[in-house]
Image (cartoon, rainbow over the protein chains, first blue to last red):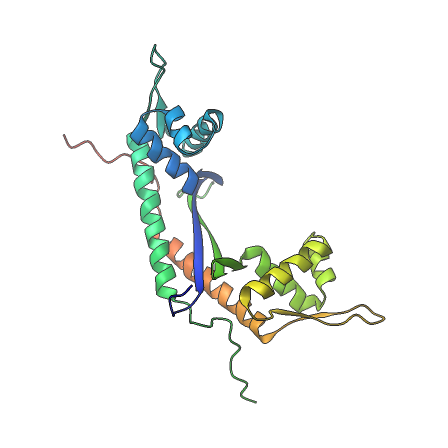
Length: 124
Length: 124
């Protein structure tokens, strides 16, 4: 805001769909990354301030929409079951970040003028 | 889905902000376009299945966030007041469509593979 340049900015949100059903978006990919680090859906949910139930539903939705397992839930034992991001899930994380980078580059390339809504000069 | 090609697709949503406050998004620009055609906020709201109150609030929010008037409401008379999209508002519509076109081109350029989440071959 005090940058001396334009206050104007572009925001973009990217989703990946399969057969018209959402597979990946910013929240889902963040969840994948937390699961990958925590090796646990419940720990990942806690870190995102999300209920376990919600996180579990998102994982099921992603797996189903992708048509391949992105997260593999391990059977629970005395210490509770763990979860692992599969090789497909790792690809999903990579793909999503590369898409976000492509769109961020487009945002930079289009470079809004300092006053993007200035009316064109009246030439009549 | 029956295209014989990939079922996978990228969806993008674009917003324009000023000083961190949303000015333009898909719904707002659609509203501007309806107001431009109908010359009336209430007629535009009706066409979008939106309450007059909601449309009026969106217009106020846009005008305020933009720092210039995008829609000028005319004083009501016997036939009710009209509304006009200003030259700034016309620029806003043009700008938004050009941004959407830029991001659509990026979506095409990144061209997802047919199986974007296929795990890389195991080379061990």
